[in-house]
Length: 626
Image 1 (cartoon, one colour):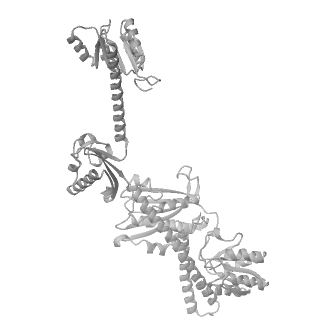
Image 2 (image 1 turned 90 degrees about the horizontal axis):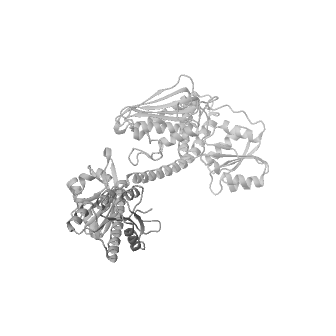
Image 3 (image 1 turned 30 degrees about the horizontal axis):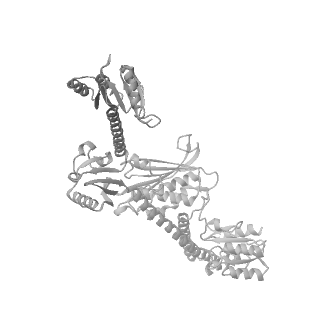
């Protein structure tokens, strides 16, 4: 219920007079304009007010037994803000004035009253009460806005002095609201900043409203960006609203950096695809040549060195593909120690300290072989990310330690990690460490303390996503000046570890040689694949694209198997497979690829990734031929 009003919307008036006949007469006069509440006892009236009655006007007789009108109205102030009017039969004006002053009474009328004059006085009192309440509401709204608005808000007069401002604005100027009222902002600023402020405010007063983006010095030497809007209200009064948009601008910059990283990933995938074609030809040719060079030890040593170099190139392309593609994790049992040792060259090239500082890499690996269920390529990326973060946290150089160990985790020992056996891989540095407020946010996507261009805020979230998808967990310990320690908990492996880049295996000839169609737009890769198959005893026929392959299938029914590249111009291997299945539903097909999203490949067709060895090809062919 609005104060001073009844449910019908009319203002309420409280009448107090010890004579019932007077109350009846007053009610008859006022009931058309007011909701009338009356009593003959001032004590009862005080009880009504204490109980929640909210009149707009109180009209009281002065001479009443027990309490005089002025005393009653003075006590009523403790419960009500109503306009107070006095009815009096005093003949002495001085006595009336004294009563009015003591009771802080807005007006009085003499008995007997003139009806029209009394009604006018009561109506005017009601209107004053309404205006006062409206003004108080507006002030409360303004006060609430000033106190709770997170933006910096201020009002200045024509002389530039603060007439209103809120806490954030006062805090930005290094003071309190009370200490800054009546002062000029220019007095609190350096000369250059005060000059810029004067120009900006003069422009706003001339144009009516302006908005600008202002760069200010932030904490720890960074920049803070404020969107400042100024509106002239007339009479020289200027309202200024300043909104901190630093986080939004940083987010925009990080999103732009993320777009660049996505483009880099796409490019890396394309480079890896082409490089895999080259490596397939190189490794395949070396393997085929190794069977034809005889027993010359010097020549065999050269072939072995070339093969090892090509294998290192193959490992590099695997890392490029892991960086660029979005496939589901390929979880398998991995020797974590072997993986860490195998990253030696990559880490050595990546961890050069800034400004020529020295970063030392140490390994503290478990003495027993530790195996984990994880995607090895994604784990390599995760460890590379963690090591680069550690390097960046050591601007003057320091030590990065990678440790591995088998651990048994109890329930609730590691957040969100079930009890069980795990491999713990730890990356620790001797860097600057992180304060608690930064540590609490490091797993948020796009959160980074690095400057634009040196970090996307996606490194640690990516690492966290890897361990979560692998069924593991992650902990981070860090303190300013004491470095950072990130521990990855990976599910323990349950079998022998997969060995990447193993030595070439001896391959037995095919038990039942067949005629094989080899399709690849790269002549060198096609020749190597055909050479592998010929060494196995198969007869081969070659095609350089999908159209030529379809012509072969149409004209040569003796073809029993097709080995086709996936990425070819005009017709992909998947499209070729679909059309070949229409012509020859029972034809076994093997697709080979240097880079492809697996979802784009034809259904129910096995895939062999480049670069591959003869043994890998022989195994797939044997399975397809049954």
